[in-house]
Length: 190
Image (tube, rainbow, N blue to C red; front, side):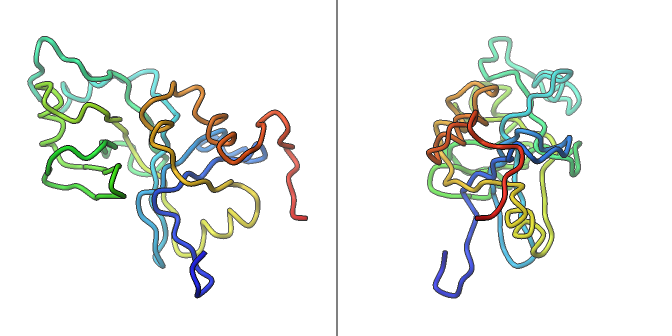
């Protein structure tokens, strides 16, 4: 928390508590990319789309693919907002046309040039293709945190890029020192 009582959630995880029963966010981990007075923007990092692969994205965008493509084929659903808008969450490697540096070790790019490089096996080695995003206006997120919908933890790059999607929610909770099996569906304030 800052001296003025505010806090910055950029480069943090929002971890859905067991009591959060919203179908978009049940047992999700959201990586917060932007946060300010106007609200927050984040990307769910553990919700694979079962009916879409990276090859489908390339085909839809008419991007020619190298025959020896070596990037992960999984596409994630980053949230309920603008599900047709794509983002690549990645470790910084080079400059792209539209990149937001979230921190020294993570960036998010929304321009086609990164996808074209990925299709040629010249993109970032560690990258997640994500469609859609999660967003909150004004103090909406702070209210949801106060209502115990979310746990907040510093982001962990190993969870983002090095862990199976199915394990990310439990691992993020464990990073706070909790056993996910011991969390109650009826969390409250002390």
